[in-house]
Image (cartoon, rainbow, N blue to C red):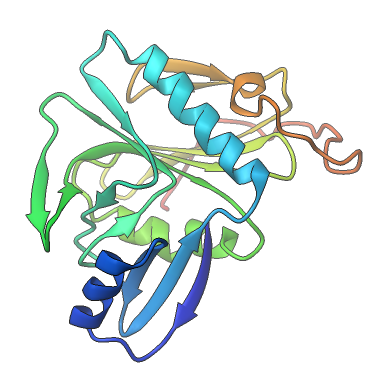
Length: 209
């Protein structure tokens, strides 16, 4: 998801922009960011994720959401957009300025691009941690089959692993599902250079992230 800032907005001006524009926007300290995937790979990956999770969660008490669902993030109000999310059990919403905000996602994912990778790994991840229900985070590369996977283990500790290659799979313990990277990246075309397979790093490392 790309972020292109425009400055000098009040919250009221931002909310009016959100109501009238076709694009999605995020607001932070007077700056408004246009949120758009920008590539066919981004769109393909987000669609694959939603379809796969919809199938796996059909008979469970969890529901996936697309990137159009606004998420209330206490550390970065009024709301944020993720590329996708999952909430479980009793799904909670809050009505704000005519839209429903998701309050209790357990899993969030972002599809990375060169312009957003540092933001999604840094500030946005920090903001997401202010959501009490948030337990699992996926950062999905689009230039090669690679996923960074974080799982909350304690108040300030998250486990961390990197998954590489179309033959690999990823287990999502928060929602008890397993996805293959082949289905996540179905129909995504990689250049010969970016599709080179890398040796996976050791998984399960605990870090105060």
